[in-house]
Image (cartoon, rainbow, N blue to C red; front, side):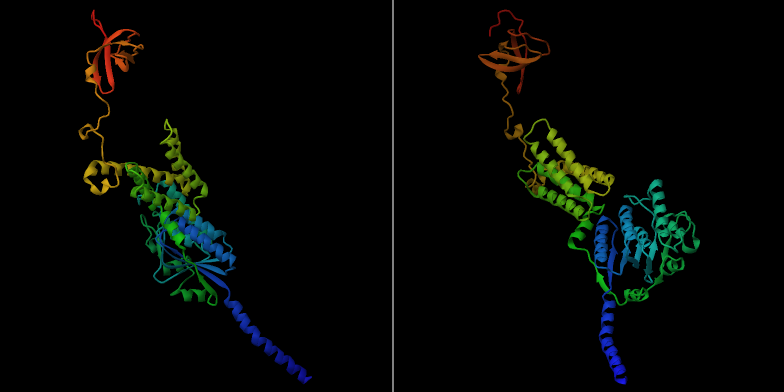
Length: 444
């Protein structure tokens, strides 16, 4: 009996020796994704975060930690990121290691938990327009409501503080938010009002407080393609790219062959469409529409009437507008690009012209004027005073016959019938003017 008990104890000890390391290994294999939210909030950032969230869910991650340091950005991109966070089944933790300003504060409020470094701040979320001024009343009202909704999305966060971050008229004098001042919370203040769970001195301390110290930390980084997408989809960069493209193609019209301006324009458009494709804002249909439009514009060289060129130009503009997430903003960007291209061409041609030797290699400056020895039409002054007969009625244009030669002419304004004697009274290049001959005895 004693031997049996001893054997059982030995067996338990043997199994435990293998079981405990396996349990520790199993605990350590839980994954946590660390995702940076840095620089300006725009559509390219949303594309990067969407990929990171999908990878984390597929890997069975235990949580996602968003390491936030952003001055804010664009509300439409922030809305998409907030929706992504709200719909994620994973535990989402916001770690503000420096600043979560404007759209950054909005994103942080959609996290399940918020932790801040001792020097971090969050707030100052008033919406502004592209000129840097406060947005109109309608856009401002919508954004204030969105901030309140963000605070209410998680329990324990009083919406009054989110409102004060976006509404300068909300009076919170204890936190430097009064009339005309936006609320910006420091780390200790955010903890006091319930917007921060805790102030942590480092990322490792954050892991300990959240119970994730044994997790396998997977840091995601932007790919090269995503970095390009974030740059070229920035609403400030978009009109610059389109302006370079427009100005480049206009310059190319004055150049023989295909040179530097056309190459720059092509690169700008490739970057524009590539970035918007990677960011998920554009589909291949926009590229197909652009290529069709470009083909029609080229075909205009060989086709009459100008219809192909007009349709092609509209197709190109439509494809660019469709490629952006905000049609109104893209339309404004296109108008800016067209205006800059026109102004740029006027400046270059007016103030530089032939004096700009470098431009002479790019733009065709030569003119076929009379001073240079070019003649567009022979001025047949020897016809003046000659008498001829009309071979067609002149209404007032028609034709006469002189010495067996048919000549296109116009009368001085009156109708002249066929077979009537006329005298040539004026010759201006290809324009020959006649009047009816009244003198008796005038011969051809």
